[in-house]
Image 1: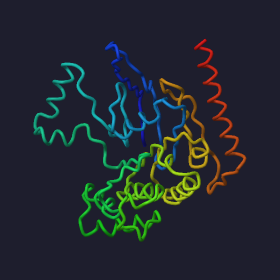
Image 2: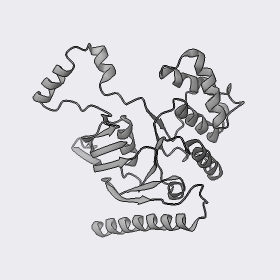
Image 3: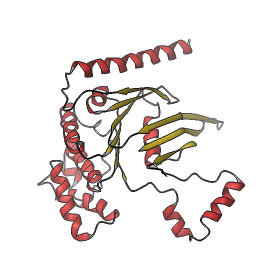
Image 4: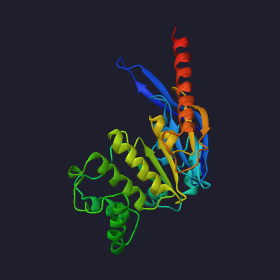
Length: 290
């Protein structure tokens, strides 16, 4: 279970004239995601979806609030007062600075994240990319290559093990990123616009492959996307963010049985509902700007 509690993220900004300013990307967002669900985050550009996803992953610390996964906090907040600092020192008084750095402010190891830009190592072959990820998770050397080959095959990259990312198409590079994420068998997969950089036909194929890989695994997936069709086709629930500062505008269940047809009238109705929310928010912002 993922539990985000009252998440706010504020960024300080220094203007060209050196005056201080700030932007609230996410404001008081609370969201619970049950195990095994596929949830998509949608909303207008700049509404804080990716920021919120990175907070779930522990890649950013929230200004306020915290994230818990199965009852464990993802990031421990920094001490904000003398009292908190004293308590922090008491808690870690028996740990060396090196040990402390390993335990504090570290994302949990049951999370994997897939980015839009593939995030693979260009100097490693496809096989080496996956094997290196397994190495970081402590998988014994004799098991790494077999596991790497197995997951490359699962995403359709059998026969491409010795190719470098530059020798792969965009769709194949994203398959490689998915293979790396799946190979460590994480409980939670976080995806930030993973198919945005590929053409429409490849995108649909990757969506189908993702559904095949996800189905029946019990893994939780949280997807950030601007593609409403993608969200309604893949998701168990869609969370609609408001324009900046990002808050949860709507939570829409997708109660359409799987496997799904892209031309299903129920999916089309959901798409129109989300578009209507977007139009309403845009009109509201226009009224305020007059």
